[in-house]
Length: 320
Ligand code: CP
Ligand code: NVA
Image (tube, rainbow, N blue to C red):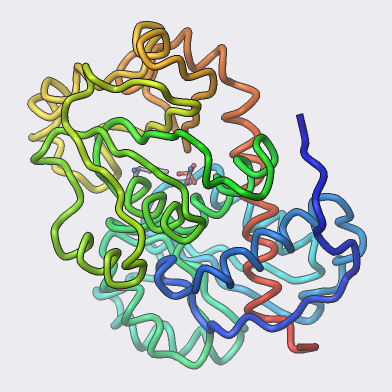
């Protein structure tokens, strides 16, 4: 299934002219391609890159739970010769024990980068005032590392040029959806988004996307019954971490028709289903479809590590 490619098989890590990655808007289309190319090479020959982060320590500051992001950053940093320091935000107390900027300035005394999972995107902006790069490990608006892994996975399945791909995101127009939209625009993928109108990404985000990628338009629709002719369907939870639980029941009701199940696959002809996980079986995805697609979904999870290794190496490697 893996396509051949021209990705370099050497340990040379060239410069990435971006210091932080608060969202994929911080990277140009060329830089996203550069991260993906290096991720392919790192996955193929991890040994060649084992010293990339030698002597570097990276803080992992998490305000929300995580399985994949936490483990893939920790193990990936170890594989590059660096050291990860996990910080539970409940202990550190951003905004309560001390200000976010004070925390960031302190972390910059000892570490070379801050990877942070936060409730509010503005927390990342405050962290980014310190003198070390900040990488978004998920916030309310973006999940850039997830999208980098997803693009890597799609390239493994379909080859480097993803522009002929017929792919749709189905469900809540959330952080994962928004990052996928930016990634799709960067790689010229004609993504369609099927979501109830009231859950579509906000106009301010669409304007930012259109201004970053003026030639690219992503179609947003709410008529899931008319979805047709797809290669890939992507979905994510209907209720994201940090959302008001009181609104859950009504939101789930409005999204019921957007469940990814055998009927939707038959209707669209899609053979591949992607999910960032954690999945809520028989809500956004039927349990049987998830089980059928587990190889692909776990490949996305595995690729989190390869994509994040490449991103960190490009941001932090000083032999540039
Ligand atoms: N996909 C993802 O970010 O998973 P975690 O929430 O477990 O990190
Ligand atoms: N949209 C989900 C993604 C989890 C990885 C959330 O923010 O909870």
